[in-house]
Image 1 (cartoon, helix red, strand yellow):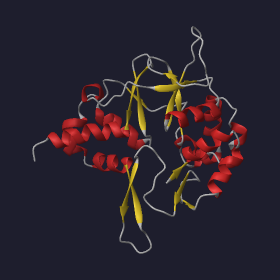
Image 2 (spheres, rainbow, N blue to C red):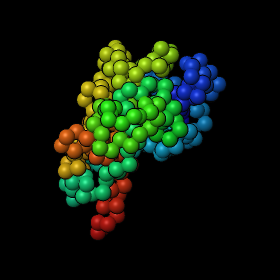
Image 3 (cartoon, helix red, strand yellow):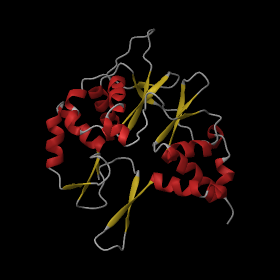
Image 4 (cartoon, rainbow, N blue to C red):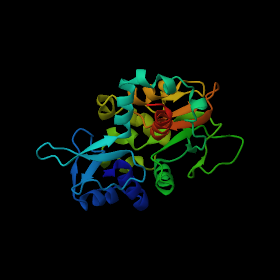
Length: 257
């Protein structure tokens, strides 16, 4: 499996869009239908270049289909459909449930798209929060920073790029990350896909939110993480799909049969 982030990381290493086209052309992929060119899959099933296990292959008996993908989102959708059986854990506050990670690598709102992609590639991150730059300290806007306690502006992730044709990325690489996301939100492809603007309306919860609320937001808005902010809108932490699954799994294993 090769994702949009893999292609963008390759582009970032070369600083040009031709690198991405060469990368795609050199691989035996077929385009995954319905994903707006954001995902390509190898002819060899079950081999993923992603470092994070967001999906798993399962065999299918259907004629002509060798594998289907089981994702973390599929699992959460299933649990959400049976939330009555999980009320014992979903009714816990996210902070009490141990679902919040307080290690947050982010970028400032003055970062360039190409620099953000390079940072994500280097740190093997699939998404980063965009935080408000500080006027009190000198910051390197081309590098990752500690995002905790900073004002959340939005999110930059490979998923946000589904509405942007790869052929148009060349002119966007040197653009500011916030400007790029706002421009992307106004494109016909982005609007037709009903994709949420990650700067105008980021998906967040608070430390006192119930775990069920975080799961509901992740599933409803099809995001892979929910940012946790305090009452002033400052980043407190994040809850990834993996965090949600981990907490629910621990609770299920501890429940008597």
